[in-house]
Structure formats: structure tokens, C-alpha cells
Image (cartoon, rainbow, N blue to C red):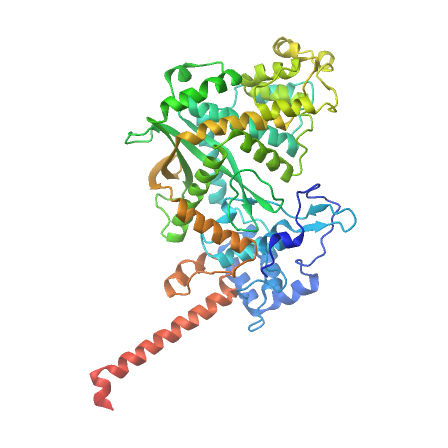
Length: 552
């Protein structure tokens, strides 16, 4: 268990019927040939770049750069200075989302669209100016994952530690999964099932214990308007944007600290949660608590030293990231029926059939992780309604589903403990368990989060296991709208690349940490301009000085 400038719709992007198909071969438009790689590698700046990297980088990083730099050089080779990388989009490839990220291919006969890339964006992908947008562009078009250095690996461990402090895995879950007598699927479809279920469980923990970690959120960005979609998703050209929220804190509004607080004492003392009963009770509790409690959205940043980043673009991007999370969570919390639809489209955009029955072994596995949906499973077994209209209506209409049965478990499972807990479920069910069920329950959980969302946001900085500094700030809807529009304009090829301002401070601060430092034409021209400006200022100063006049 683990825990240019063409509009997008002009490229005939549709809801994918198939995704990431191995049978689709790349046309090679972005991939250099062996001969091209040899020529590129022989260019003096590239030899210099690789020599520099060999002095300070690890063997893994050197290998990484030797693969990435030639690919970028092939696409961005400057016509004015061929040894350097240009700072505009490659000719005919000016839509980063279509040309480098999603890379759709439409079958001219069937009209089916397949993707050689990823037909969605993440919140972090929207932060194109967190460092330098030109560097981001080169990385996007290289189609090579960002190098994972030791600090990133350490940060992931720290996130996992924080997650398990709040959401400790059941003590015997690994043993159960290893010894269960039926194979438990762990393919992408069933991984999504588990992810949605864990988000449900963790949001219950939020109201019970006052905090939750690693919560899914998502929304849709219009490739036509470059704005986020409000309400139902109606356009196949609306691009899925997903994120994972590091930390949600339920606290008293007038509190001077971030101490988590249960919504009510009754919830904090509850041990065995029945999800259906919990959801029936929760709306009234949220309404009563809305004046006194708030949910703060926070992001965790790990650092190798007890310092915060000096670069203002980095801090600003971190704030924007949390604002995105808060915005998406608020949107999901407006109306459960609309959110239900958005969740189903989310799954479809990933290539999944929302009516595909979930493997019964996975259901038993989820019940072992947390049994709060046991009552719901028994309702589906009997064919009873859940009490959520969109789901119940679809269940009544969908009569062509295959038989959903756990009868074979009666023969396969001999473990007495497992049989004692679950054998009443080993029958044929009237309603199959599909992604629709988890979408319905997760949508209702989001709806109860929305009313409590705070305008106060936070970034938590950790060094090791020490939370050494927090930055508190306010949600700014107008700024978020400006930034998201600007980012969408970039991703959908509706504006030019906007590198860092080429002043000496930026060129020294940002460029020295960049993989493209020695082959970047923007940096080269910026340094030349700064040098020329300095010489001109000296000339002007000397020309206007009294001593200069006397000499003349």
C-alpha cells in the first residue's frame, strides 16, 4: 500500500477514449538522431557545460545532463548563435501543452485520440515562473523528468513521516495483504480507487482530530479562455489540473496558534465510524461550527538548512501553490452533485471506465485499511439506495452491468479471521462497486470542507523533523486569477516565454543553479548588455566629472 499560439481546441483534442497506448509510435519530431546528438555534443559550449558538470555533479547527474542537454539543443538551437539555446519556442511547436506535454495523436479513421504524453497538468506545473520560465520551458520540451537529487529524496521521506504521524497505517495491513488468499490488484485503476478512499478517510480524520495530510484536489483549466472552469465541465478542451494538499488544519478562528481541534468532542471520541451516518450528521455540525472554526490550507517545504529561500520568485510561487490548493478545494466544496461529475471526468481523463466493477479483493483490502464503508458495502450488496441522488439514479438506470459477486471467496478464503469478518459479503451483490460510489462519497466530504475554508493560508518550513519557520498569508483571489491566466496563456501557446529579467543580480542568483547556464543565449546576451551598460555609465560619469572637463 502506498500511501504558435494555436488554441488547443484547434488541435482536435477530445476526451480520451484510450490513453498512453504503447502501440502508438512517436514520429520522432522531438527526438534527436544519433548523428544529431554527436554534432550537438561536439559544440564548444556543450563540451564546456559537460566539463563543468563533471567537476561538481555526481555521476548520475552527469549522465542525466548528457541525455537532456542535446535534446534541448536540437529543438532550441539559436539561428543567430547556433552554439546557444534560443529563448523563444521552436518553430511549429509553440504550444507546450499540446506539442511537448500531452502530445495527442488522432486516428484519422476512427477519430480516437491517444496520448503519447500526459493529458493533464499538476498545480506545480502551473508555477512556470517559480524559478525561470525559460528553464521550465527547456525542461518541458526535453520530456525528461527533473533530476531527483538527495535533498528531494530526503524531502519525500519527511513528508511521509509527517503523513504517518497523522494517518498511521493499520498495524497488520502489510501482513494481511501479504497473506490474503486472493491477489489484490495494484494497477493504476485500483490505485485511483485507493487514493480516493484514502482521501475520504483522511477528511474524516480532519473533522475528528483536527488535521489531515496528503489530500487530493483538482479542477479544470479552459484552453479557450485560459481561466478555471466554474460549475460543471462541459468542454472536452478543459484540461484537468490536479494537486495534493500537504496539510489541512481545523482550528478555532480566534486561536493564536495552529493547534488542531476536533469539530466536536463527540467526533473526537468516536472510534468506529460508519461513513453513511457520519455524512448524515456532518452538515449540521459544520453549520454550527462555521463561526468558531476554520480550515487552514498549508504546504510543507523541506530545507537542508534552517533558512528560507532568498529568491522572491520561489517564495511567491510557494504562496501561489497554496492559493491554487485553496481555490480548488473551495470549488470542490460548493456543490456535491457538480463535484461528483468533476470526479468522474477526472477518472475518464485518466483513461478509466467509471462503470468498471472494482475487483472484490480490493474492496476487502480497503475494508481492512478502514472499515468505515462496511455499512455502504452492505447497502450495495442488498441493492439499497445510498441517499445521493446522482448515484442512486444512475444505479437504477444501469441495468446492463455484469454480475458482481464475491461467492468465489467462500471457497478460496480459508483464513478463519478473514472469514469471520467478511463472509457475510461472500454473495452476489445487487449493485456493483464502481468508481461512482467513491466519487459520490468523496464529493459529499468535499462539500462539508468548503464552508469552513479560511482566508488564512500557510507555508511550513522543515529542516529534518523540526518545523523551524512558518509563513502566514491571506488568500488573494484576484492575484490567483491573474497568475493562473498568465500560466494558461503560456501552456496553451498564447504568449511568448518570459525569462527572468536580465539584470546582473538575477543572472548571478538564478543562472548559477541552472542546467543550461553555459548554453543559454538569454544569459549570454544579458551579461553582455550589463557589461556594456556598465562601460557606458563609466564613460558618462567620466565625461561629466570636473577632472574630465579640465583635461579637455
